[in-house]
Length: 227
Image (cartoon, rainbow, N blue to C red; front, top):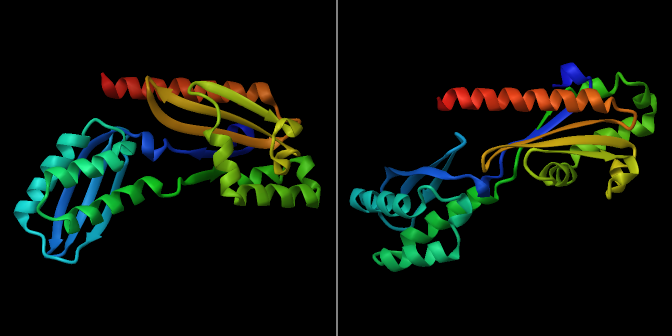
């Protein structure tokens, strides 16, 4: 996108907590070690290594696979909460020492930091506004501040193009820039958010047209895969 707009593109994938679990698989790696694998409807695969203070048997692993999939398949990640933990403890009474490490590691997968993807950072420095050393420095600091970028990309609603121009931004660090974001979804499925960052004199009509075109292409590609 940055090649077309000549601005910096920033994007994030769908929120882990909202993704739908398609399958959970536990694989025994040793007497006291499991690999947990979670696959979601968006194609995300998360894996974690779980260690125990006591031996785990093949029969216990089979039971874990059954109970976790029976309860969580088709549910969002955020379903792995206190009530689910209580349910598993109640149903699988044979060892709290086995269940607790599994729940703790699965919760960590949800809490993992969201990755931010950047493209065309160098494009900004080709623009006249970025000849100012102060502005260029502020721009680099902005891209390095993950919390600010996540706040921007997480705002708005699905299929909603949002435009933030200079002082309209609540954050002081953004006053010299404009940001256009688009949160993409297919049905109720969150696909992710794309943002364009540039100077306040950004070519807004061009950026919005490119975002609408990419949205159409994504929808067409997803529909082809489903048919």
